[in-house]
Length: 271
Image (cartoon, rainbow, N blue to C red):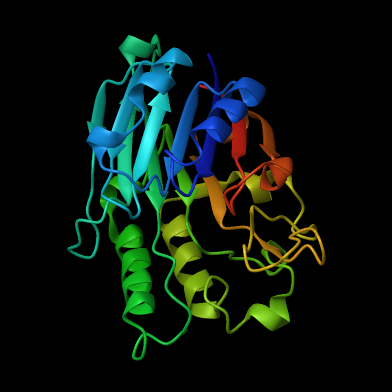
């Protein structure tokens, strides 16, 4: 069965619900993972998504901050929320697909919003950065994030780290900027390696090519200089690697009216 899966940090789902609808009509994902939804579960625009054809919705939200959601045409077998760093701050949700979705083998999907980490890349001076590093360490240590053998798992989200040199507009200039510091890159890649995950973007796009999914609001015109970073990721377990048939980043979404600073990332794979 073919799965079209999109991940997007929407930066307020209620504010940008029309942009989500535009994305859905353009990409037509079977499953949409959102981060930074910024609303409590009771305020989530369920009716709008159901009108768009998505009957199955798993939420982990909070008022005004963070929040993750999985919006799906496929029914869930199970949903789960994990907490990290002893904080109840709505940064993870996972769903399982199986017989209800007419799959012959189980499929587990994790949706993450990793802490941004503030502006100062020193855990002794910046509690937000300390939290981020601890969060990445806990991702590495979390056994359910370690698919083995034939496990069919997918991990997506705004992981808030651009781990490789060409995941940022200037490796040298961003080495001391949060999201591309060596310690963050090390910890994210350690979590990826521990779980034996495959980074779909870098599996399909040469390391020599620049790849971005985020452009700061601080630039008056984000296209000038193209100062982006690849903060949004799709990882698959090794059992799913050969099933990936397409991967795309909807760069144009950064120019939509009142856009998120992130753009949607989509993978197509056989499951």
